[in-house]
Each structure stands twice: as structure tokens, then as C-alpha cells.
Length: 226
Length: 87
Image 1 (cartoon, rainbow over the protein chains, first blue to last red):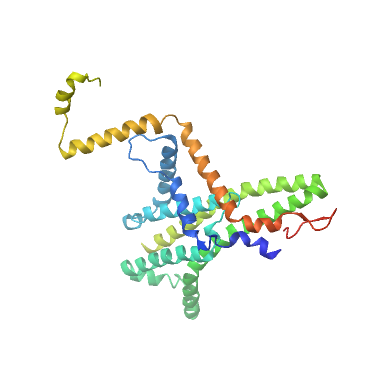
Image 2: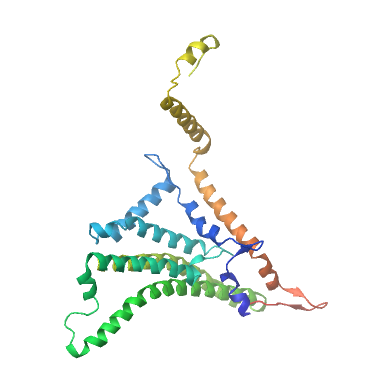
């Protein structure tokens, strides 16, 4: 039972070759680019969404922070599209892999921290000690702030992994329960089916929210360091 | 643009044989092809999207076929059925 529950999270292979790279690259097909002045509906909607998101996210930044706009917009589009594609039946979701999320979180967080230390060294070091701290608490608080700084990328990655994995597991469990109850008690199966529908709607929302939260937190770390 | 057979030589001389002209000719040809065959109606764009999703689901189903076989109910003995590995 345990093996079947987590079978959908194993990296997919085809004739022994890993095809996870193809699956990671697949969402890029869904964002066509166009060199026309007036585009078709799909591209116009996508461009409008990207402009809306970039305005909402990058307004708080100064000139230095706004150089990260392309990076952050690519990030939110990638995580959002990957999460949403993972809700299709039988599909593999790359963002359920902690390795991938750490691979995104650590370089982005490190980039913001190094940028802060390079351009605003005093302000970056000042983050390790909040203003108004009693003198006898200073050593302990510096240690706590250092730990909280290094936990940031771990929290970013684990938050995304746990949310997406938990949602997929719940869908798998409730779907299996609905299937098993269909022969035993159709009325109970109907209730579990309604719960499954509501859960799927929730998972669509979680997929988009988690992409937004990941990108927003990276944006906030950038704002603190620029 | 209608060209009569007798006017072909003079029409051919009118072509722009500079590199810019040749590139422009290919671009115009591709745009004519795109406008005539690819961008016929808006609904074709939506159909293409659903085709992608369907192909993606089918592709993933084929990959996970083996694991799914274990979850199917099958008969052990005559008259008895069991669900092996469900949940």
C-alpha cells in the first residue's frame, strides 16, 4: 500500500532513460511568444497576466531590485505552470521533489544575500541584530538571527514540496476511497466524490498560491538586501 | 497580383535581388502561409491547447501503465474477486 501511494512521486523513466528533463521543459511550450504588434487572444491574456503580476510584485523595489524582474517573473510562471500541469491525471510534478525546490531556493536566496553584502555591507550585517535589543541578549540573538537567515532557503523549498506533495497524496487517497466505496455504498461514494471535487478546486488554488508565495518571499529577501 | 504569361520576363526583372529583398520575399511568403493556413480562426488555438494537454496525459499514462496494472481488480479463483494493492 505504501509503495503504491508514493509511486506517482518517483522520477519517470522511459526504457530506462530518465525523461524528467522533458517534463520540466514541457510548460515552456504553453507560453508562445509572438513578434506581432497585435497578438491572438491566448498571447494577449498571457501578456496581460505577466504585466499585472510584475507590476504588483516589482513596484516596491528600487532600480537595483527591478533588474531581477525577468528572473522573478520566469520563476512564478515556471512554478505555477508546473504545479497546475501536475494536477492532470497520471502526470509527474517536478515541484514535489525536494532536490528541485532546493535547487531553485538556495541559488536565489544566496544571490539576494550576496547582493546585500556586496552593495550594503553595514545594512546586511545590521540584520543580525534587531534594534533595541538588551545588551545581555545580544550574543544569543545574533546566533538566532544567523540560524533564521540560513533556514530561509530550506523553508522556501520544504514549504513548496510539502504543500504540493500533501495535496497530491490527499487526492490519491480520497480518489482511492471513492473507488473502493462505489461497490460497498454508492451514497457514501458520492459524498467522497464531492469532497474530491472540492479538494481538486483547492489544489488548483494552492498550486497558484504556492508559486506566488515562493516568488514573493524571494522578492522580499531581495528587497531587504537592496 | 495577376501576371500574364507574356509579361513574365519583364515582371521577373522587376524583382529585388538585393539580400534585403530576398529576405523580405521569404518573410512575406511565410506570413502569407501563416495567415492563410495557421491563423484561420481563433478556435483552432484552443483546440491546439487541449490537444497538448491530452497528449501529455496520454504520455504520462503510458509511462505509469505498469504500476497501474497492479492496482486493477482481478480474479484469483472462480467466483471470487479481490482488489490487489488498492490504496
